[in-house]
Length: 303
Image 1: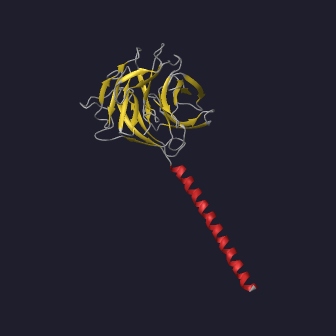
Image 2: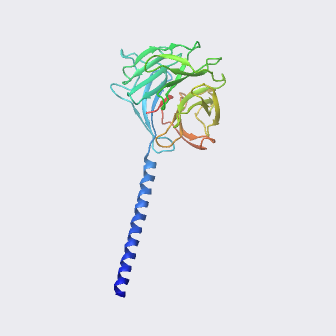
Image 3: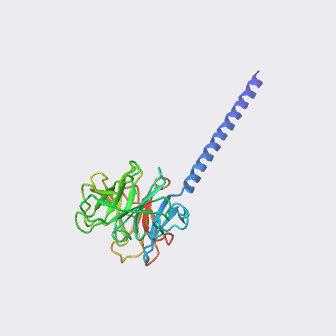
């Protein structure tokens, strides 16, 4: 009887040990899988680029970032080329903003004062057949539209209206998809705030990037009042060419993988710079950069 009990106890202990080993192995396997998943996750974004000589506008799809693995840049091709043209084949010159509506698969865009149709609203699913409609100005300001972005919480499209005098420098709201009206948020931005990128974070909070030389500052903007709030110095250079006093950049915030800002520069003189990072005060400092991977970038769109 004692021998039987001892044998039973040994069997039970061996079984428990085996179970513990199995559970430990499962936990290790799960952690390894999670780690690999993080490493393999790639930010995805649409990239609006402009040739600085011709003004021709192009659409690319970008995967990856300097801090999140290999970067790939491929043309967004539905038919023909990835160059933006109207349905008669005329090139769209100097497009200035891009947004994507995932519920309909529709791209929306803008041009500013230098566009082939100044201050136009662009709509397309195929970049080779873009509808071009002049924006209807309800603001009573001088329009110069750029940096279009869709609020992921409401679907409302916002853009920057660039201005060097008050009250033209401000955030505007577009009436899309139903109308091409442009209405102003109640308050302008300070004239000295060089807003050259607009994005929303994962909580649908609006940020713009103030640029000066090779430096950038992330600035919170209230999407109801239009007032700018806290600002955070970006933790590294945003461009490779210091002589441009107010450089052009695209600004994106990735919510799918790395939860960081991503920038791309418009630099026709030297190689473009792509970064991802977070300023101090917003979870950083984090900064990663790579040069020469992107075409000259004027805006990003969330997929």
